Length: 236
Image 1 (cartoon, rainbow, N blue to C red):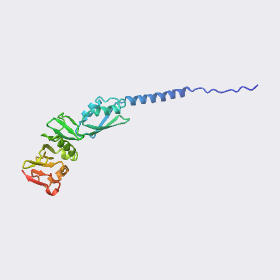
Image 2: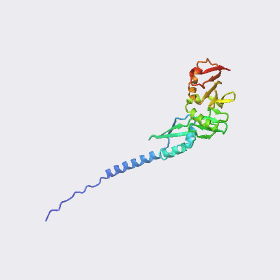
Image 3: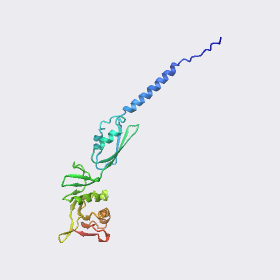
Image 4: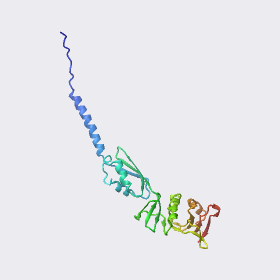
């Protein structure tokens, strides 16, 4: 008869059980704390025309809710409801820092005829009177020329565009015959008047450079030629 082999059963140490339970508790508590942790700091980047308050209100984070219960997808969806928001990126940190990076649409002008703000994607939005320093189109423009105006203004630098006060459609005529149906009069914030056409709209990007040579004189600046030698200035 074979001898019976005794197996020694190790007793589970109470001390080890307590340590394991303590570690488990700390892990669960840490996860719960992180999940419930409120937003501590909000950083908003990339905005020019949209205020921080608009972003925070649209995102529904005025009361600094939990940073991880507030989903990135939900934040983006809410912020994109602001008409001027083209795109938005969200970054979160374990320390409660929320970074919102916004890309705005470019405002081209305010159309006085239909009371709409025209954006760089050709979309028109309601004027809320909160967007200052944008050019105002003051008169009617035929549809085909209007579409060309929007596309052409995309070629104008933002700082130059913001220095325009009024845009007036003013076709060039000779003996009552239209010789340039894409010409506009631009009244600048510095009180100068610029004549430009859509074919040569990029000439506007040299406005500051040209005006710096005029010794602060005020008058009419003609930039509607394809040849720089034909640019000229006439005092008021």
